[in-house]
Image (cartoon, rainbow, N blue to C red):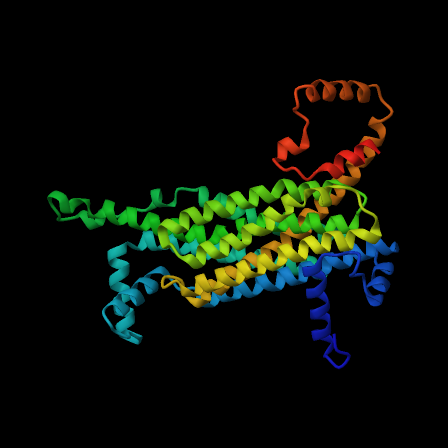
Length: 419
């Protein structure tokens, strides 16, 4: 960062580098952040805790800004459904309508589509816009309140729940059942009387597409957010194996989810760009599983940065290549506008950073709680019974880690356990 750069640019670059890296061995809290945390209503004076809180601040700001930009694009590009249909019809006829001509066509669309039907779909679109704005607002407030840790954690958690859970609940509702196109069948006879049913089916498919474009960025952000969170926590707590296990366990789920997406899109809009981009994205999670022995063993603070960093850099290069190729794929689609493609990318990127922070907060608390319970467990009779049960299962080969994961490079774990 240049000393001559404006303060806001210097701060933005610091936040971006810290959030993307997620490495507590190389990125630490700045002097002004340490002072602010020490003077907070609930002072934070430990250097490691200050590093973590400062990292949360950076990731929330980056995620919040990306989500806010995506929401802003969605708001600017939003049009009532009747206007959207009118513009499509005019474009199909090779016309450029405006003013009174456009209003007349909108009135015709409203009469044909049904005012109540338009109100339902417009209400759904506007509600989804409000959700986008609410998520961005909660993430930005959480970033602004970063030094008030409990408040920031609560705001970020609520923002993440609104980001992921609420759109899924909305998508589960059968919106098409509330639509009524019976007016299209009036004065019609025979097969033509089914026109309303056909239109309703077509509109139902359009609503499904709308909801899928809303949900997809959130779900795409879920697994990468969890994996990046676990990698960051591995550099924060290098002696603990659990974050590495989370990476190894969730990586296959990410591969499966990406394959599900590519299987669907290949049938709808097949493309070699799509296959190449998803293939590059899959290479990263596969690498995490292949390097499981390095990720799940305890590390010293001196080595964890290099070990995890080397794996993350290799996986990061394939991920970056996949993002670039998929971006080209989105911009190449005739049915997807540039504003929609940029909006989807911003939402996915912002969702990854917010997910990363929230999952890190939850995982960190659970690790500490589990450690305390495990310390108590070691001094009880249940520990001997637990070991007996594991021994019984081991006799059948059910506790073989290599067999469960289907890999052959975990000899380091066996040596570590025998040491």
